[in-house]
Length: 266
Image (cartoon, rainbow, N blue to C red):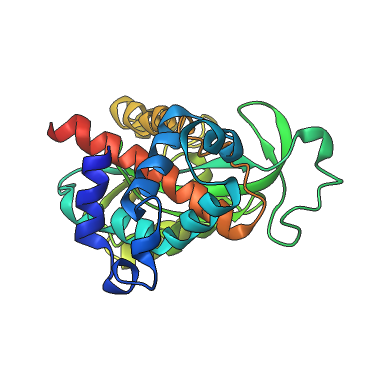
């Protein structure tokens, strides 16, 4: 991982970062900090303090400051990988996953991220949670192209246009679940050049004819992708600031996408 991180640091780091003041006095290089962050995500260690105690010679606070400094670089690397991975001709899938920031018992009393996070229902576990929701667009074979973070209560369909506008995928076929049903959304995407397919609910007219089993099975693969992504702590974000939250999420997605690239292209 150190070798990979040195290479991508050389490719994507801006000169202002590479040649900043006193960089020659740093005990650990930026590429090594990046490798440690990805390693932490890969190991699934939620507590950065515990990770620093065992794997880093830097104090927890110093490691945190260095990690936050690399956030713009991590963003550039992730988007740089998007240009390198060939997804042409692949169907894309849109869905969302929850990121709770406290235990359900503290939903009403939580003060962290007040004004930014809120309460919503997590249908898969049948519980209410306080936190955020990550809306993501993923390729049919599991590469995460882009994402948007919102309050937990924001409906999935509301963020679709922004997600597509930001990602600008070359693929024109999108799959989603019943939460994305609606003529307005379909028409907006069609005007942007994208065709969205969603299954009909069982009580809807022509549902049996419309609900193609192959497309439904393909759409469900995103749930496996999100499950794998959770191993990188995408859903267990212990950050206590917005910058920290974004850094942890970016690292989780970068680690996940690097693993995807290593598996597909090795």
